[in-house]
Length: 482
Image (cartoon, rainbow, N blue to C red; front, side, top):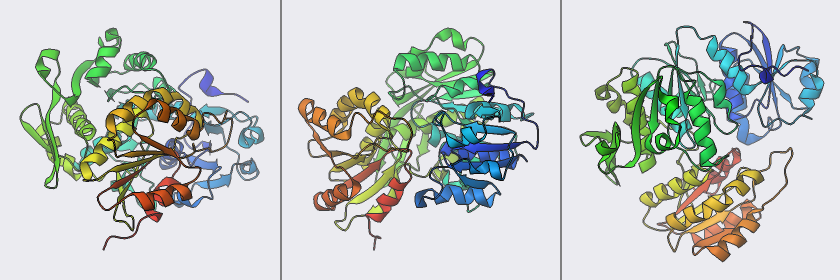
């Protein structure tokens, strides 16, 4: 076996080569597989969850594109002879597909993407990075370009609603223009494999690494950017400023700013308002943005898009009118329906401290009553990592009548210490916190509690990453509005 990603981010993958994606159902892997298939490569893949109902929206699209899906048991080797095995950080060394293809060269997902981008001649590459919001902004930026007739290609960590069809999952779009927008992931530091022309860095938060470590990662990433960077003020204040010496830099403020011009900020939010009449923000004291989705964080997302579009040469007078037409991303503040009690149910991908707090704050704007926030951690490791930082964030954003509910961490197989449990965390939060925290061993018991507790003016917010069945559960517990 040769692991080509160990020696270089750039791997020479000849046109027409055959690639087998291990874990092809993952949101990043499935998008990359579609990118290679659309570029004329022979693509197959395997996945542990290929037969699960909640994953059909992705696997049906892959199959419709001619990508053959196998169980993750090594059986692909009987029908295909791939030139490369593409894998992600989540794939363990003892994976059956690795064993079956012991002599086939391996390429990490990030290296495969870097190689694919290197082959895009005459195309401007724009990376969207940050701890929170990069999936939404990647889709929103690409959609804003699309509405301006630029027809960009994009690769994303979520399913963009405008581009979802029976044939396209929505996390990859093969455009005809000369722009390529992609989400650059810091969770495994794979963004360091890329050399984009431009980068948009949204924020720095509590996810995967300490903020100091992320500041170093983002600094190293910026050194690889070729032309320009749009960067949020907090990130700018934390990074090594020498990394910016070779690029054009525009700074934006993700909060409602006070005296922004004294801080060297180029773009800021002057005001934000969410009411029954609509969602509006004013930027730079004069330009009103009509927002299609609620939340101050989404006003900041829109602001970052305006800043990047202007850096690319499209003036704000053209980009701002396109922003309200954004159709959103699947599992980002999706309305699922109402419980029999009348409580509204929303489904959201929030899974780290900042995203959870933002989602709860946004939910507060949508209802008169209480918020019942239900969180399924996306693994035991992530729960342990965020355990300390999550409590003070929840204590700040929850009211005395709100309830935060933990479900057991999602487990997709592989190596795990199976700790801490949600019960461990709730016991600690009850000792140290003042707000209401509960845990349930399964969804059935959680749903029974929510059915009895949540009333007409309340909101139930289902949160968690990696597990697509959360969306199906949110819909299943509701009834159609009359």
